[in-house]
Length: 268
Image (cartoon, rainbow, N blue to C red; front, top):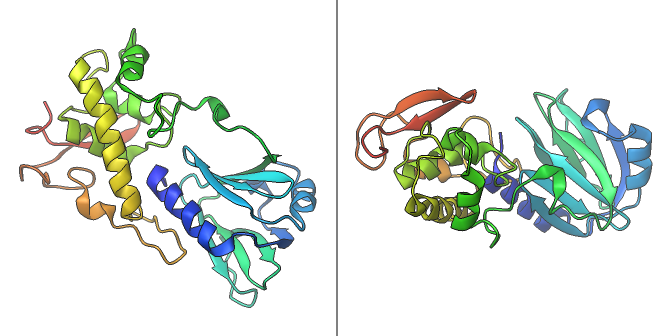
C-alpha cells in the first residue's frame, strides 16, 4: 500500500502536471470506486478545475473551484496522464477528461481505492479520526508518552495505527523501529523517554528521506507519472535478508497481520 512518501510524491507530481486543468467529463467504469452517487459525482466535477493539491495521511486531496475531491489509493491505486486515443485496460476505473485534450486515468488492479467529494473548504485535520501528521508540532515525545499510557500493543501496531499518527505503513514502521533499535513486537509500555524522542526524530528523518527519494518501489508502487521511487535502496531491514547496519541476518515476524522485519542484533 502506498504510504505517506508515495502519496506525497503523487500529489506533488500531479500538482506540476494538472494544476488549473479543467475537467470536461468524468467516465466512471467501476461505480464502487466512487463513494458518492456516480451521477452526482460526475455532475459536480464537470467544469471544475484543479486549484490546490494537498495530502492528509494517505489521502490525496484536490481542491477544486466549488468542491474538494479526496482519493485513497489503498493497495494498488495509481494515476496515469494519457491521451484519449491511448488504449484502455480493464483496470482503469475512473477517467477525467481535461479541457487541454489529456485524460487523468485512475488505475486500480485490486479495486480497493475510493474517491469522495466534500465541500470546497472542508477541514481534514480531524479527518476520519486521524492522528497528527508526522511533521506537525503536535507529534512530539510528550504526545507519544501520553498516547501509550495504559496500552500494551506492540510498537509496530502503534505506528501503524492511523489514529496515533497519520500516514505510516508497513515499510516505514519497520525502518523507524530499526533506526530506534527497538523490536517491532515490544510492548509500547516498555519503552523509555529517550525511546519516545527517538521515535519522533526517526519518523521525521526517514519519511523526509523517502519523500526526497520519491518513495519506495517495493512490490508494485510507482507514481505512474514519470517518477519512480528509490528509497528501497536505503532500507535497512524491510524486505531484506541482511541488515543494512550490521550485516547480520534479518528476521521476519507476523505482528498484527503484517510481516515485520527486524535485526535481532541491532534491535534489542
